[in-house]
Length: 194
Image (cartoon, rainbow, N blue to C red; front, side, top):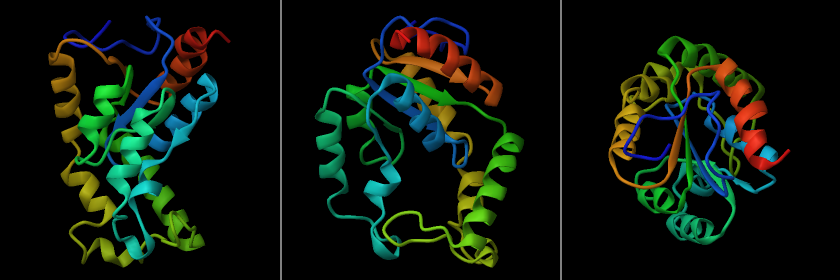
């Protein structure tokens, strides 16, 4: 099934062997984790957009758009569909869009422990950056938790626009971890010829 229709489900066969894959979902849905798994199954490179975007001190890298354009021009990749400045460019080249359509409760069960772990362990994320102190959830309106809550429905709106448009990419909708496992070890592996 292509755009202009309903998305494929976790058990539906893929009509192609994906070469350029976008993974979308709200903040904390597991986009990067799934993107890495998809890249492993397909044997293609994964490029983490957050690593391309964030410079030291959480500053945007000036080369971000140029780096993403170079990435999009290649023939095989998996990345996250985020950052409004580059979304159209990536979408124009993608042949598959995987949508992590989780509930707020599912996302909270993933995002809260992940963020707390990263902060307490001071895990370096990108270019020397670490999660800010946990108390900043109360003072920073753009704290990850608050941003995720505020922007929760935007992904569904964007995917609806993709589905309403003619042509590629194929869209797959995954509604939880079970769907992710089913799809990775079923339709995606089948499409990869493994």
